Structure formats: structure tokens, C-alpha cells
Length: 312
Image 1: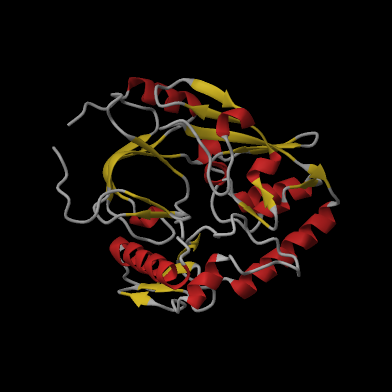
Image 2 (image 1 turned 90 degrees about the horizontal axis):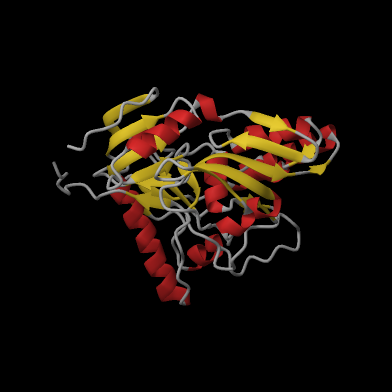
């Protein structure tokens, strides 16, 4: 067993991860580290054996941890990393701040980051995935991010360092985002609140928000998210090609493609990670057979399948 550094934060061995993901599945991490603050995180990573893998985890909103768990130190940021500060046309949010909270605090200050209001998860994950909806993406508002690299070095990342693409970024391996600064246009707080309320109502009408899901399962083959406009085109939307392949409502074990929105993968109760991932792979296969379109997972899948022996 690798000798672990002694941090000020909480370091837990063999920590089950299922209760930390929205889909409520997954085996244990070798270690779960919840740092006290940036210095604690930096010192820990500097002292950690470079051969030990590190996996930064947000609130688990877009994640399947496989049933055998993760042979890594999972780093989960908490209270010391969820502050939100507004400035002149800017908003700086800790990586653990929830996207919805950032949108609301910005709106209260007369700053428009309303696109974040309906995106599940935290700011660190939103940056990593270049999250977006209604035609706006993190990339459109991103100014800079603070991060701690795998060797403990603290750095500031600019747009040139990140290489934003649809639903992905190129972040350094093992880097942990600690805060993000956004550019935000001015807006009337009341009008911004009204817009967010409308967006929420539209989301709740079309998506299974009361079910256990991880948001959109696959990226849209079109290469962009829904604009929310009346003239939105649906031909290359993931839900459309899933429907055309006859997979709306498809089930495997406790996993199901939602009847309400067929690009949402649900744990209807008692699903394993294998049920969920296998159903997703079946959907990919059927869509490819039907339309020649190869769906790409938007949900991140990590860890080992059940039954893989854990090394000593």
C-alpha cells in the first residue's frame, strides 16, 4: 500500500462513491480526499507519490462510477471551494459552487450567466465539459481559472490553455480546477430572474428532472446543444436518433432510457453501473445500425467493472 501524505482535510480509505453520484451507483475509491483549502490540496498533491492516479470529482451529476470502483485518489472539493464573488462585469466562483447558485447570485448582482441556471452540477465540472444550453457555453464567458496541477503547482489557466470544444476541454491530466472567472453582460436582475424561471419551467416540462439521472447521456450528433428557439432543428439531436432506433423507454435491469426524454438514462431503482452502461452501449449500437450515426457518451464513465481484483 502506498504511503499517503497527512493532509489537514479529510482522507478516507476505501470510500464507496455510489452516494456521491446522481445515478447512485459505483464501487469504492481507494481513497477519497476532501481538502481543507487550496494550500492543503497543493501540499497533498506535491507529497503524493507521482505514480498514484488522481481523479477530480464534482458533485457526480454527469458520472457513472463502475461497480468495481476507482483505483485512484478521488479529490472532492467542498465548503472551502464554493464561494461566489461578483465584480464589474465578472463573476468568480469556486469550483464546488453549484452552477444554479452561480447563475442566481450573478443575476441578483445584475450580471447575466442565466445559461448556467438549468445545468446540473458544479462549476469545476461545467468548465471541464464546456457545459452549455440555449446557445451559450462556458467557453463564451470564460476569462480564467485557478488550478492545482498533479505535482502540486498552482497555475492560472487562460482560454489558450484549455482548447474549448463541444462538450469537452483539454485540461492537464490530474489538474484540479479550484475556481473560475467568467465575463458576464449586465442585465436587469428582475428580467434575469424571469428568464431563469422560464428556462426552469421549460426544462421541467421536457426532462425527467424528478428521476435519478445524470443529465444528457449522449452528445448531440449535430455538435451543438439546443438553442431553445422556436426554429430549433431536431434532425441531429441525440433524442431524435434514439427515438428513430426504437430505444425510447428501453430497459436493462434497473436502467431505463426515459419515456419523457429518450436521451436521459435513468436508475429506476436498484440499477448497477453495468446495467446503465450496458443499456447505453445497446442504444449506441441500435442507433448506429439504424442511421449510421455513432453516438458519443456525454456522461463520463470511470473505474473498474465488478469482479476486477484490486491490487495490494
